[in-house]
Amino acid sequence: MEQFSNKENRLGETVLEIDLGALAHNYHYFKKRLRPTTKFLGVVKAFAYGSDSIVVAKCLEDLGIDYLAVAYLKEGMALREAGIKLPILVLHPLPISFEDIIKHDLEPSLYSPKILEKFLLKARELKKKAYPVHLKFNTGLNRLGLQQSDIKDVARQLNESEEIKMVSVFSHLAASEDMNEKEFTLGQIERFCQIMEEVTLRLKSRPFRHILNTSGIINYPEAQFEMVRSGIGLYGFGNDARIDGDLQPVATLKTVISQIHDIEPGESIGYNRAFISDRPKKTATLPLGHADGIGRQYGGGNTYVTINGQSALIIGNVCMDMIMVDITNIPCEVGDEVIVFGADPTAEQFARTASTISYEILTGISQRVKRVIR
Ligand SMILES: *Cc1c(COP(=O)(O)O)cnc(C)c1O
Image (cartoon, rainbow, N blue to C red; front, side, top):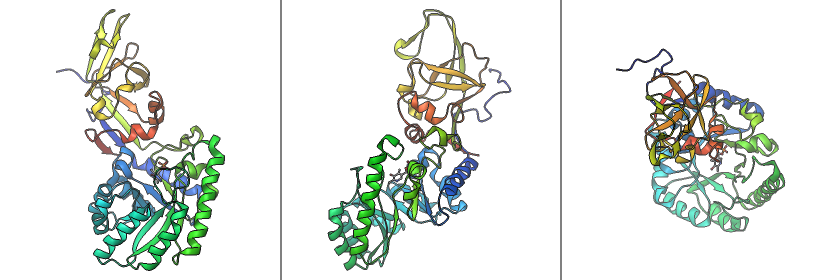
């Protein structure tokens, strides 16, 4: 049996720690930047950006958030089955899910005349009255959404039906974090205003409006309308170094040193002998790999993790279940705690070493990693 030091990771395994205090802090931070009457939608798709959607949704519900959003049916079903009562917008519903969407009181985003018609038929079949739906317009992202030219058709369908009721109209910004694209973004907002004018003209109901995501809240608060939708901001990132300092990361990925190796000059480390040492080295093996969401692009010596306050580079190839880090100058022992990302490096800094973004590393932490709530 190896002896564990007193700096050992109490958890003794790889865990994703979820800090609900940080979540509350971030929520209040954005709330303060908004008009008091602006509704707040928390985006909890993809397991609440890789954390735990049920725990996060319950916490946001307790904090008094107005709305939640998921991308797909299953994510919304999980929240309903856990007893979440808030209205839940499904951002990308597929026709195959319409029946279950209705059965679970989820509110679809309708993004084409065809989708609207199909949903209407399903609502009719299930004998619904004034079932809440949201209209999504494309204003330049060119991903999902109705076109302004669809309004006539959509208005006809909506005005003639009692089965569904349009509660909101929304759009999504393509580059709200990039101030080089300010003109483009203002153009999207302007197009959204024009769409709303026409919608108001042709439709009987008075929907509320929303277009801002996290970076939109930061950079274009004048376009908050009646609601905003924040995902990444709630989890502690604002796509902006100035804002990140005011936010707190919700997720910390921690692990533990499994084994330490002394490497002689000329010896290699890991699969395919991807790293060959030219000097004596010490390495630590950590129990997480690409099956846990740490992709192979994090190998090769560009990315660090933190051990006892010092940076240890990931060297060699990332394996499925393990990575090796260089601890040559770091006093540490088997059992010591390792911060993969959290306060330092942040998920954003960690992601940047592999030319990606916080969103990707956070949502990619696989379900094999135990979630622990703080
Ligand atoms: C994911 C998503 C959001 C959240 O964006 P953040 O940048 O994480 O705040 C908002 N709106 C839509 C339509 C989305 O798909």
